[in-house]
Amino acid sequence: MKIIIMTGKFGMGHMTAALALKQQIENSHFNADIEVIDWLDYVSPSLANKYYSFYHFLVNKGHKIYNIRYRILENKKTDQKPDLNAFFKKSFIKLLDEKKPDMIISTLPACSQFMSLYKEKTGSCIPLITCVTDITGHSEWINKNTDIYFVGSPFVTNKFISKGVLPDRIFETGLPVRLEFLNNNFFETAKSKDIRQILIMGGGLGMLPKTYHFYKGLELLPNTEVTIITGKNHNLYERLEGKYKNINVLGYVNNVCEYMKQADVIITKPGGITTFEAIYAEVPILALNPSMQQEIYNAQFIQKTGIGTIVHGNSKQCLNEIEKMLDYRRLNNYKRNIRKIKGQLSKYNLTNVLEMTIDKTNPLESNGFKNIYHPIREDYDINEEISFNIR
Image (tube, rainbow, N blue to C red):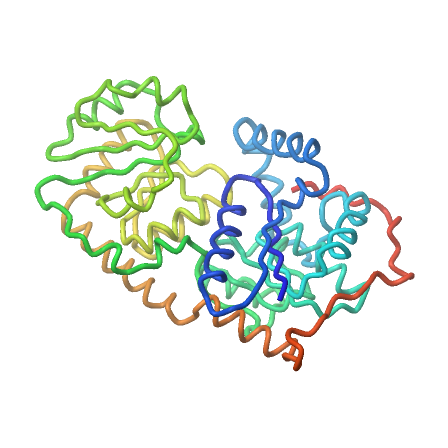
């Protein structure tokens, strides 16, 4: 059985979700050949670099413009055409012709759009599963030829149903996380009641306050130790490393879950995957100055479910909110709510949903999984008008 997971690096959330899905499927009973494909990189590595560079520039310097566009398209029609449809369509056909997958899983709206159009034009019955990587009901994720949606919360389910998605196609699996976060025994180590641990992540996104007063304020918090993971932001690492007694500064690390395991609070930009990693790690979240629209929705989810809070403002306001969160009664309340969400997520096991999808859409034949690849039909117009729906 051949499974392709299609994704892209618009931020690392889409790719991280794809790799987590691959891990979970490989750890299940499926006998599958799984390949994660960065869609733009497959088309053209040089084009991918330019496209991703433009996206990162837009996020860092023009997020207000991004958010305006996001909100305009949010409740527009579903079944949107993907970016530069006519230009990329030949490459998509080539990919399917080359790989001949038995199932497509998409963690990127554009990939779901391409596959839905392909199924419509060819009559292919390849199952398409779309994994929504934020707590959003944005119309760009919804396509009529998607068989299954993995979503993170009832809010997304209700939004999708209101836009015409059948309820039996939606599964609240939560966002996919790496296997180390799914091992419940991993988080049984007792935390010190004397010293509270703060974990700060997201330096690579430029989200941390730049003022001296913020770090000095962290240093002065009583009975508290702070770990800051700066990621690939080398300038931030050099600014902070060794400057403060009670602040441990790290660069890029491969064992984030180890630090979450020890933390009493995590301060971070509320990306979808990071939010669910924190849920599985049972650590409350302080969502710091969310700016992108999908981050704002993730932060609202954090606050409404009582698993953390949001802070907008300057260094002083941030420090005040940190001190409030570190109260043991508030921490315990957050953790009770987190465990409640974890219990709800256990209702749908991701690999069990995949098995149901296979059984429902493509019964097993005596010689193994049915070959459901369909070659392109002659009436599939590959020269139709280009859509400039740039994500």
